[in-house]
Image 1 (cartoon, rainbow, N blue to C red):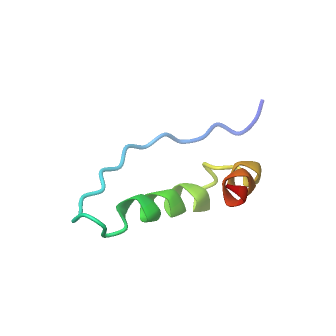
Image 2 (cartoon, rainbow, N blue to C red):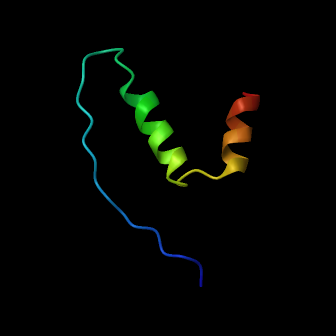
Image 3 (cartoon, rainbow, N blue to C red):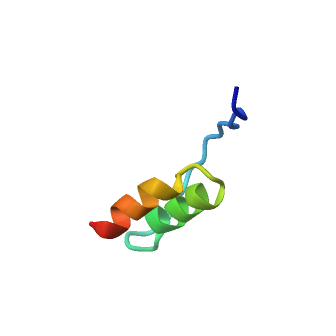
Length: 45
């Protein structure tokens, strides 16, 4: 079996257009929650 991933809950609070989604997406990517193939798929779009 592969390595089990730790699940956590995070709440991000901030003003409109303050980068909440961008920051959250970057955090997920840096923690390995999104594989490289998925990133490449969205880069093409």
